[in-house]
Amino acid sequence: MRILLFVLAISLFAPAAGAAPCATESPESALTGKDECLVLRSYKGAQSGAAPQALVVILHGDVSGGGPANYHFATAEQLVATPELASSVAVALVRPGYEDGSGGRSGGSHNNRSDHYTARNIDEVAGVVARLKQLHRPQRVVVLGHSGGAATAAVLAGRHPGLADGVVLVACPCHLTDWRLGRNRSLWTASESPHSWIDRIAPSTRIIALTGTGDDNTGPRLAQDYVKRATDRGLSARFEAIEGASHNAAFRSPQVTAAVVELATR
Image (tube, rainbow, N blue to C red; front, side, top):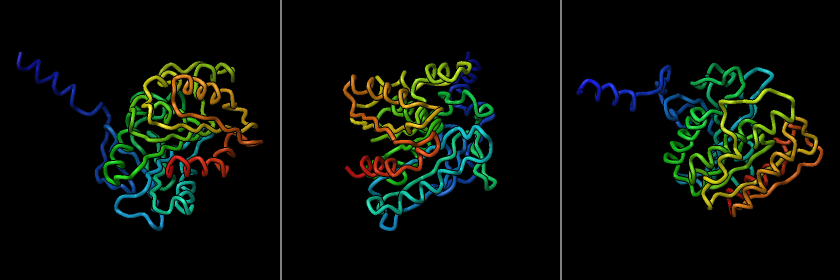
């Protein structure tokens, strides 16, 4: 009986098979989430101090065409160069399984960049956000996600209520079944869908969703329907169309910066 209890305890508290926590941790380069080591880039505004005004965590998309996931590094750097965010910290996080283009790779799997918005991957991201929040002690936490990163941010808001004070969802595939069927693609069965987690989002969390009118991947209706479900539940949520922007161009829109500033400062 004692042996059985010992084995059960190990199974409950040991890291998942194949997990690899960071050998060396740093809020500037890599932190362990739940079981995996996720690489990151951290950028501080010129006036950021011991307790920054806001912590902004940026999550990249699926980068389905291949290559490293690092296009959001420039976004993080640009955000803290914005005068309103000069006392904030922006962290570009590399999602599980992705490489950063400089020899670093986040632990976990992106399943060949398909059907990987899993509970395990989202919990790894949430774990790093929680660590960053503990380390920086900001007044507010905002998670900005693009495409698959937006799906991750939206699920995180419901799966870990209260962790983020605000989420900015750019080009969000906010209802995975509708998204996949709308593109005549096979359904994803392992992933968590944002629309399923709306009822768990903390009432204090604010949501701004933005999609380009020229987006032929995650069309505006997906985010619009998500926002309607959220507002019907009484959440502070709104949708903004980015006129003429494609799926990727939307992420570079000044409207995205304005949304982050709004949630980070007011």
